[in-house]
Every structure is written in structure tokens, then in C-alpha cells.
Image 1 (tube, rainbow, N blue to C red):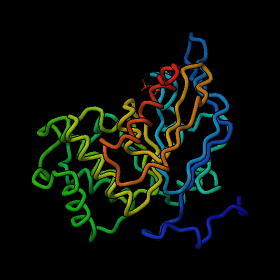
Image 2 (cartoon, helix red, strand yellow):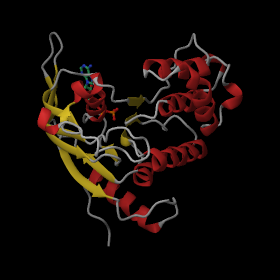
Image 3 (cartoon, rainbow, N blue to C red):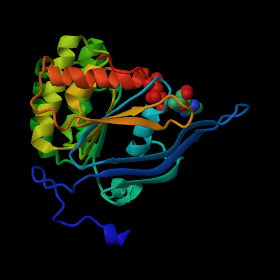
Image 4 (cartoon, protein in one colour):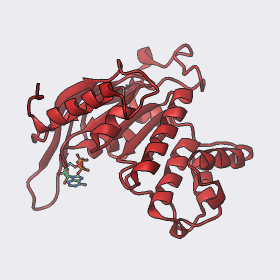
Length: 276
Ligand SMILES: Nc1ncnc2c1ncn2[C@@H]1O[C@H](COP(=O)(O)OP(=O)(O)OP(=O)(O)O)[C@@H](O)[C@H]1O
């Protein structure tokens, strides 16, 4: 809609890129398969994520978290309702060059390319000039501690290293929106902690809008400004929002305030009152 067009004043101060507020309005999703009852996964979902905000989606298995990410990524266009980025239809914004990176639970690297070539592939797809590829590739591999492995093929790396490479690939294009589906769940806790911190360091610098899915209450509270807890009811309704904007950054896993918020997430997931 022209009246909601992105103006030059609404730009990210660090990157100069347009701001990327995401809104889902009355979004519904039904999976239909032959000889099966339709599965209504999402119904009436209203969700707004401010530009530069980090929002976590948590909820029981099968409640529709990945479905929401797929819709926001533009991978699933078969839904009802409206999804906008900065007030304009998402599909239009993606066509106009909004950069969305998606980190999945598994690395999804192209096995016939080296790690560096995988990242260059993403840079080419995002229209970065070839002259920038080498520097960007090395910079992101350095962030995830994989510089030495740039010429290795995915099959020559451990699962955790492959996942770090996929995170580097996502960061390489300076995404306006970063979507992550349990990105650290396959990693050992120490590596996961390092990568969460790297993610937040990059976010502090570039302020991408981040929407992630996690099953880990501590991870979610460490990363997020807000956590959206979804319920398992068939409508996939949003059960509660937990606000962490009052927990200062940089955060520490030892911060009692963070621990309290984690307990709150678990309480909502568990639907049990907090013990006095
Ligand atoms: N392509 C598909 N076709 C049919 N049903 C699907 C499809 N993708 C997902 N579903 C179903 O939709 C529901 C929601 O799936 P989704 O992956 O969004 O859940 P989730 O909350 O991310 O789950 P998890 O935490 O286990 O990853 C599940 O019951 C799933 O089986």
C-alpha cells in the first residue's frame, strides 16, 4: 500500500537499510493432505515484532512455531490473513530486496560446495558485489571460529561445525530479518553459548529484526526482548507474552532476573502457578 511505503527516514541507523517491523494480522494456516482431515495449525494469530527487536517463539511440539517462521520467510504462501514488513505486504518487500536469512535446526549447507563457497553462494544470491565476497566470508567465519576450515566441504566437518557455518552464512548477508528455528539445539552447551553471544554482538551492531524458535527457556530469555509462548490448542493461539526488555544487556546466565524470567516461561508452558 503506497500510504505505508517505507520512507527514507525509517532506516536502520547502522546499515542504512529500511527498517523491518513484522506484523502478522489474523493469520491462519491449515495443512491439507489427501485422505486426511485438514489440520488447522494456526488460527487468528496477531503478532507484531518491532524493527530491531529479538523475539522468541516457544511452545509445545507441533503448535505451529516453524509454520510461523516459514510464513514470515516467504517459504509458505498458503495461509490466510496478512503478513507485512514495515507496513507493506511481505511478498512485495521480499521482491524489493528485503534480506531474510533463515537458520534451520540442521545446517542445510550445499554438500558439493566448500564452506567458503556456500557463503559466497548466499552473497551472490543477495546481490553483493564479488569484490566483497572474500572479506565478508572471512569475517563471518572468524566470528564462528571456522576460518581454518573455509576450504573444507560440509561432509568433512562435525555436525556442530556445519551448524556454525550455516549461522555464518546467515550473518554474511547482513539480514534485515533473521529467522532461526532451534539454531543452537544441535550444539554442545559451550559452543551454543559462544554463538548466542556472537549473535547478540552482531545484533547490537546491525539491529536486524530477529524471530527465533527455541525449546530452551534459558536460551530464549538470554536472547529475547520478548518471548511469545504458544499453546498446544489446535488454534495455535498465543498463550502469553513475556517481556524481557527490563532485563539489561549484556546479559549473563547467572543473572537472577534472567533465571526468574526463565521460570516464568516454564510456568506458562507448564501451566502451573509459580511456587512462592
Ligand atoms: N507440510 C506439512 N504438511 C502437513 N502437516 C504439517 C506440515 N508441516 C507441519 N505440519 C504439521 O503442523 C503442525 C505444526 O508443525 P510445526 O512444525 O509448525 O510445529 P512446531 O511448533 O514448530 O513443532 P516442533 O517444536 O516439534 O518443531 C504439526 O502437527 C505438524 O505435523
